[in-house]
Image 1: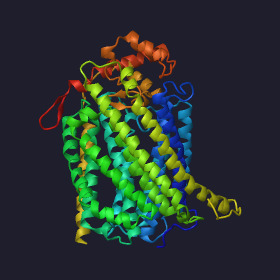
Image 2: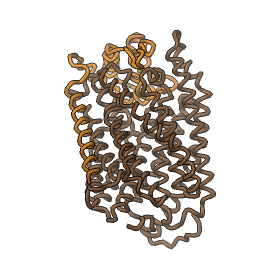
Image 3: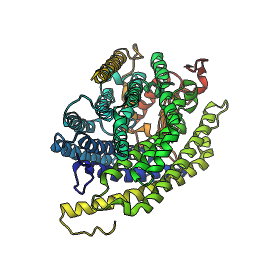
Image 4: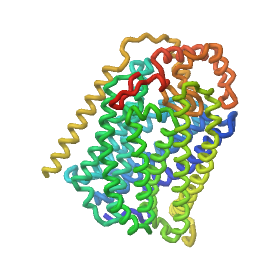
Length: 458
Length: 133
């Protein structure tokens, strides 16, 4: 089937466009949160941190979900050579997700919470998300002609879609007193679901990135290779059983921790392969350097390397005891959600939205600057968090701890670097989003409102 | 075709193992015999209602703007905790909790304090890399 990056504004493109708007706003709330770290009490009366954090986290998670959905729905059609099983289902999902996201954001501003990490909104609002996701699964499973002979990325899409549903449901088991009443039981199941849920959305994104990599290089053989499936099953094995590293310090079952520790070490295989293929990846990267989508794929590979390095270290309980509850965990999360998840979705966005109205090639120079600004500032941002984490760890382990407030004050210089680099990161990312979104809005106005807008510039 | 069959077998085996593991955990939750007062249960919902986890941690999990509160009940007296909750700080807003909510939240702190210690200094690192609490 022809690539779908034509000028038609399809429902899958709207998923990505809406997701990009969420990312832009989400990053602004992230900056406000960073400012609240260095200016105590900033916006405390109207937008205190217990509102800013869920606004930031939810917006970014929904960006990942919207982006992952948009990528899968587009590439699924390209791969299978057929239109979606049901465009109406996809449109309904988009509508449900968009409305629910807006209600969730409004509820945070109003101070109404469900009060759980990640999903901090009222649990009633999980129901429409659940319904929307079931519609997505129907499209994923019914669009392909057959389940036989499918490449690895199709398996990853299916796995990601199904496991997200499972873990999302699991994360709401707390509504039953049996799971909720005892905090240790509750936290065990909560982090079981969250650990696997991140693996589920990574499956969706990595699947699309393998497809896109093959599309750019013109060779889809990798998707059918044994090594691709070996890596997929290693990833799936980790998704299922390595979540216990989140709760090494929780007084829960020891077997959960031991299984997680052992399973996490199989990630060394993935890590070793990245190092082994480094030279080859670099050569290919140089060959496709002009391709913006490819450049983001390569950047995400670098961040996979750094994030995996931290993840494997944190999966060793003896190291985890030092990193747990410190900003090293935040560095890992930020590196993964921005450097891997967001960069992958931006790669899909470049591929899918290119040629909608305007070819992005005319703005390569600006994209290039924004790309480097984002990457360099993300690296400084990441380093500042690691440094703050090391200092907090040393405070946590010290015999005579200074008061908490004094420790936070001593980290202020690192938080300042974090905030300033975050500002540059925000600028770089907003620049990219602006260049792409302005183009898409022109399409929207032309097609939906019938206005005659010139293509000459974005 | 044989490769396809192999993949299905591995996938089904993994899925079966995962579901068995999950349902085993659900049916054998780590803490079986416990008594938690209604006051403490309500306190947990107060904790969630005001989204305390955004700034504070329990067992090192949560937000990092404020301190970990797992063992706050063990190291501070209730007057101190009550005063913090009711008045806030220069960073934390005063959430205007009712007396009942404040008492329930403190009861929740008491319950979680009894579950164990979140202080990493109390953990022992074993030669095989695991930790003992």
